[in-house]
Image (cartoon, rainbow, N blue to C red; front, side):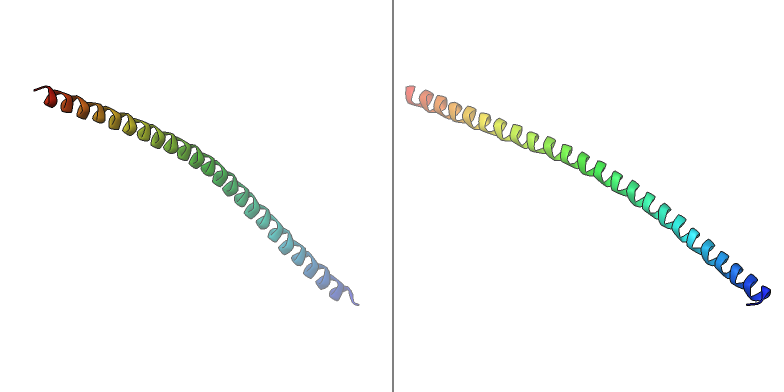
Length: 87
């Protein structure tokens, strides 16, 4: 192998190493972006769970209130019936 061939081989290897290094750096950046997105997604999922919990508690509260109103309505009906009977 001549000096010129050796020099071309070294240059070719250097370019290949540089290209691989660039690919590795790009993959690292991509992984970092993915990790950040995964973290954001996890945070959003946590916020969603909290919101769902609040919604369920609100629904339960509304159901309880509706039950109370139904009871009050029934009591009013009984009062009206009683007043109508007394006339």
